[in-house]
Image 1 (cartoon, rainbow, N blue to C red):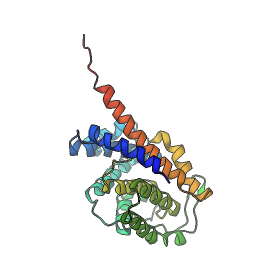
Image 2: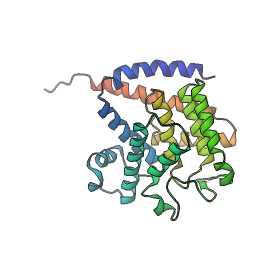
Image 3: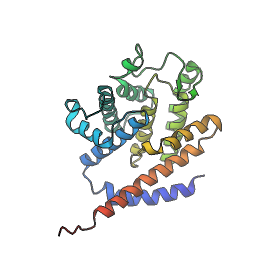
Image 4: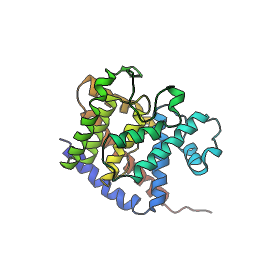
Length: 259
């Protein structure tokens, strides 16, 4: 299953590596991805920052709050930067609950008390959860499944399952468990990319404009008992991102007539 998708993805990935990744310095490549990924991942959760707003905050810090943006949104974005940087600097870290909790702690460090007074960043929820039109299951029973999810994911990696399939499957079932009081989506998208980056694959951007399709694919794990839709979404999203950026580069390489 997914042999065709893997073939297309690999062909595009190799070209993308040569045309885009290899021709950027490591520092610029990291900053570009951090800004783009953070802007879209936080926007999926309701943050109003644009990519340009995110770039300004990344370059100038909290001293420069973009016009029309709240302090809470700025703080949320700054926390996401720290979580992203931790993730990219610790790719050797075992894929376990320690990693999971630390990423969530960083993602929610300065905003959780505002949204859920008394909750502790990086610690599992102590009450049942709901999000949008979804009521999650018994939080204690769901949280008890986290250790096995982490172990099963690492085993899938060790057994040679294709990285983007592993990332999608882990993400789907992590969001199904929904173990934290806040930041489950941001944490899940970060650690899905941890799996990809550790395998040497490009970062995957979950774009705001694809939010509806993304949420629908996640819901189908509950409604249909399958993660095939989410795996397909991951492949399509990753391929689309790489193709779009290569097309953009080709267009921007055409000589301009100034007179």
